[in-house]
Amino acid sequence: MLFSRALLLILGSALLLSVAVDAAAAAAATKLHRMPLHKKVNPHINRTTIMSEVLQMRNRYVTNLDTVQNITNGTSTTTASSQLSEETLMNSRNMYYYGEISIGTPPVIFMVLFDTGSANLWVPSYNCTSQACYGTDSYDPSISSTYVANGESIKLTYGSGGITGILASDTVIISGLTITNQTFAMATSELDSSFEGMAFDGILGMGYYSLAADSVIPPFYNMYMQGLISQPVFSFYLADDTSSSGGELIFGGSDPAYYAGNMTYVPVTVEDYWMFTVQSAYIAGVQLCSLCSAVADTGTSLIIAPSAAYETIFSLVSSDLDGSVNCDTISSLPVLKFNIAGNVFGVPPSAYIISSDGECSLGVLAADGIDFWILGDVFLRQYYAEFDLGQNRIGFASVQGLHYTDNASSGLVSGSAFYCMLLTLLNILCFFVKMR
Image 1: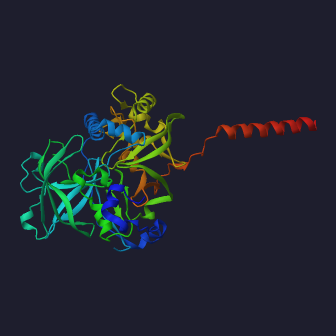
Image 2 (image 1 turned 45 degrees about the vertical axis):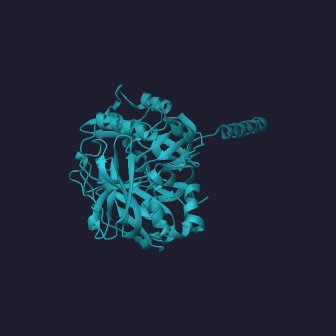
Image 3 (image 1 turned 90 degrees about the horizontal axis):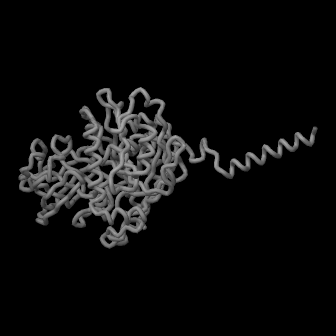
């Protein structure tokens, strides 16, 4: 099935089109549409901000505990041209990656967080009176000639933080691609101070249609339906702190120039969040889980682990009860490994340990009620990630210059291989005994 059943009712037979991924990938190098990249200076990160983000993830994914439980056991009930185009991203606070879009005619520019863990687009309204709205760009429907009134109220929550507002439709431009009649939320109130001081104005959700509040069709779906991209695929390259750029979000395919080797694909298990199955996870030879669920989420900078897995990692890595780590020991710590579709994707300690102001903290944490992995930017900075809505799959490949990807059997000896090896040695030994 190409798209979720709910959206198939809307799209009809037009969404049964299929475009070969390999053909688009081969043409990507010459057909990418690029935009300038920018990066903000990161402020200090401390234990308080880390724990605040953990709370946000808990509230976000455990808003309805029954839904989360259904997702993890696989029974969720939650309901152009060939040219690739790219959206500039910026790295803010080493936690958020965001880029520039415009809305309306004439266009008003907004900075938005591209979030695979949600599916709605919202920006501040001109009449938003919340403190978080001050200093941000805002949308005024009275000055846009392409504005279409909707009038329906909407509420969006993101764990800590959220908005209430009014739905509207207008022209939205993303990386030079013009989406007409895109429905979005004009935020008239932000629910708390979570978005105050952030470098972005609003959020553009990149999750499945089933996640969208009020059945609003997400911008990426409309981008494909209106023929602006040749295949329903987007991909992320998230630059780390050593880079002067923030990265790139590519609509319509992937750019092989950003990664080494082949893309490893894994099916999406639930058309909701971008959830998939991890065959196993382990650290220092200790297995953390088997056939466990994971979500790829660009909206968090951390890795959230199931409680039992976190406790094992904590015992092997942390040197203090508060999760702090001796900075001098980072290079000697083990690699955290995920077996995804038969390939091992390692996260080195230099990535999962967060350093700031001479202090180091574990960037892998647990959140009450979440019994699956949430692979945020700590993981995604190591791997180019392709989100294929058409084939309901996610692809990962090692970022150029980083070499933490190996075949699952690399460096490991299975039980059957061990016994075969032992039998061979015994046969050789017997041969030499007979020769004597």
